[in-house]
Image (cartoon, rainbow, N blue to C red):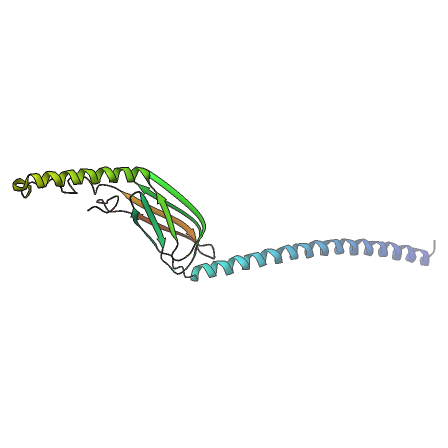
Length: 192
């Protein structure tokens, strides 16, 4: 074999090796590009989450809940704020009776109505006892000033508990809670 042939063979082998290295480098470059695209996607998602987090941290949320009896056995929660509450779960408990309402949105002025049939019956019985006690006080007018029977506190008309819990989200998804428990002396409705 002559020197030119050897050089040709060596050049061919070097060319094949260069093609193999080029192919391997090309494959690694494709992997690097795929990894870079995935990294860019993750970075975009992270930026989206960061923007949402920033928006939630400065978000103004004017949602206020006020609850009261509207009729015997009917308790209402009114949304008094300017903003709309989203994904609302409202629970009211009166003594041992509990009711829950779920609404996708509650805007300003909307009312959530909870019916409590047991509380309505208890209130009717309390009012009957109060009227009976007043009649007894009137019949015993001389003693009534010293020992009044028609005292709503003494008759237990103000010994009930009411609790309100409202969970909701702001438009940007921030979780909010309204939690209220009545004072010790609470009635089931207006007493005459």
